[in-house]
Image 1 (cartoon, helix red, strand yellow):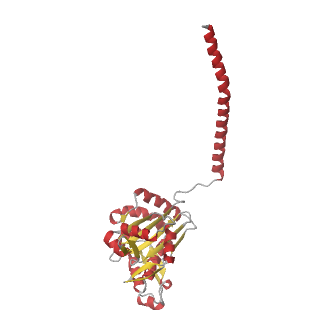
Image 2 (cartoon, one colour; image 1 turned 60 degrees about the horizontal axis):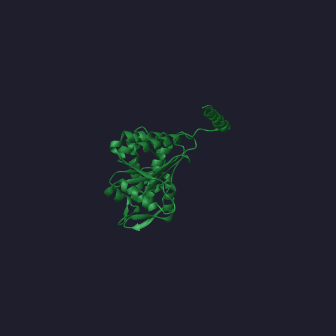
Image 3 (cartoon, rainbow, N blue to C red; image 1 turned 180 degrees about the vertical axis):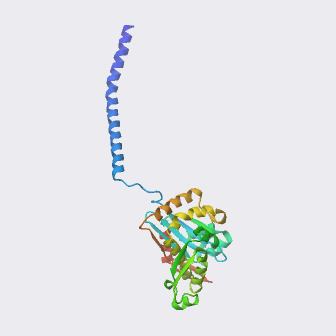
Length: 292
């Protein structure tokens, strides 16, 4: 009995002698790791800058004006670049379809804006570069005006788009600057387009008017998502609630940046017959850059 008890205590002592150094070394390294983590955290708090919500995100959406002849404006809100870019597209723009080609306008009227966005993405996509997800939001001119607000106005120098003779025909011969509210914006777009010949020029007229409203009223960026929520019964969109919340963070971030740039670009097109147009190589590259 005594021999067994002695063996037990001898074994226990030997085990402790083996384990204690291992436990000590492990505790030492854990303590060192904890100290390093605390030092990194303190250094980050002293020298690091917090990343604002939405600052690292970019969003692309096709905004559609639902009417007899729909209007289309592709928008990219780029948080990292602190930039918002608009690119209006002609309704007569050809897009690839399973049975050949159709146009943005015809596809929207027959199958809805969701299908038009899908075909536009397939037309622009290449096998080399993956494109960013393209959302859509469609509303009537009255709904767009309500989203912007009746007190919001913008000034547009029509001389940048029209010749003196063209301006004369729509009443801006002597004073080329048009000042309109959101409710009159679609009328101004139609007046400008009536003086222009090509679908590309007519699309640029819409882009110029929309760009003027956003550039001169940057608070619109942060306010639009809430307006879209308020008028959700009057809009068509594939933005989920979580998507709209994340977009709102990016637009709110952009609104507060002094270096924010708001501009519009042109996707070059060429005639394709029957009043339709196709994107040139330069036009394709423009859209690919927006959707990357």
